[in-house]
Length: 257
Image (tube, rainbow, N blue to C red; front, side):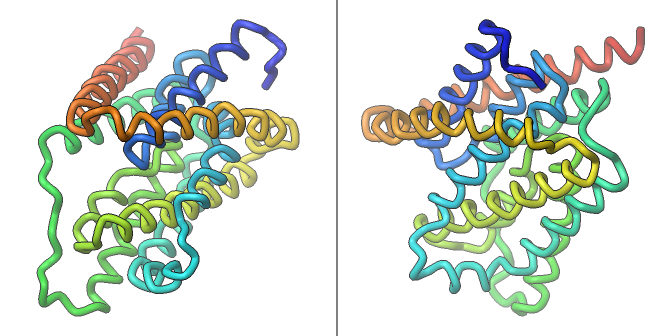
């Protein structure tokens, strides 16, 4: 991976600023938008390696306040175990995200996420479900999220719908997403490391992208108070759907040629 090309470097910085703005406004989307756009100009495994540090730091920040961390983590512990195990298993089974099929999988994941965001209703677990069963269901959702993470570098489906189903309040949901995304980022880094995709050079390049991501996130937090959340969500999800469809179609066209 090289960032010596000024045009490529400028494009990558712009992607992380945009991804940071999205995360600052809606609380998620940094890895999603980063992978979607970076995969247009580089291999998916390189894009995944670049997002590790920005994703980790911004999600650790989102996982606060520390006083309530333990209580929220206990609610979603099974899911986090599943996420970590699923991501490592997927990394060993599938290898690093590479080739046209990785682009197809990424495109389909983006389109599915956008469709859920536009048309899906937040799921709800039955109120009488035993806690042990809820933890097992969370572990299954986490394992599936991990497999998708290993294949595409995107870790929102089905993690976020499951977290919404827990009937957490707004602050708890934001914190739970921060925890889950942190675990997914660490697991993704470990998976890339197992496959030789997260080298010292990749880590250094990823560290450089932290500054534009934080700048974008700060801008997004300011915009949150001026922009209609509904309007922003609509534009964001439609853009992701179009980008995902393009990514999947492009990959399928290359595979079929």
